[in-house]
Length: 76
Image (spheres, rainbow, N blue to C red):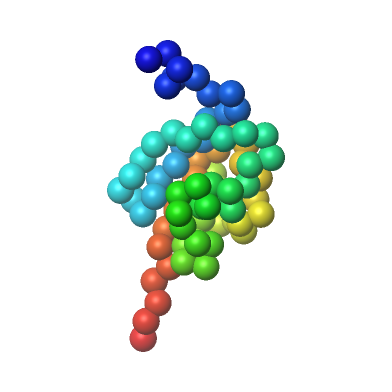
């Protein structure tokens, strides 16, 4: 049971589409792109804000970052 609680990197708070909220353990040099890939999402289909700022997929994550992932709405 203790193994499930260990994190060899650092934790970030993630909110996906306003429904799923969880902490993810990520490593040094981890970017928004890495997180999206891990979640099975494509950068072209979402908008990501880190600590309240909209960022690109190259944005590095830092310990304690608050990541919000929103779906892109399109239509006419």
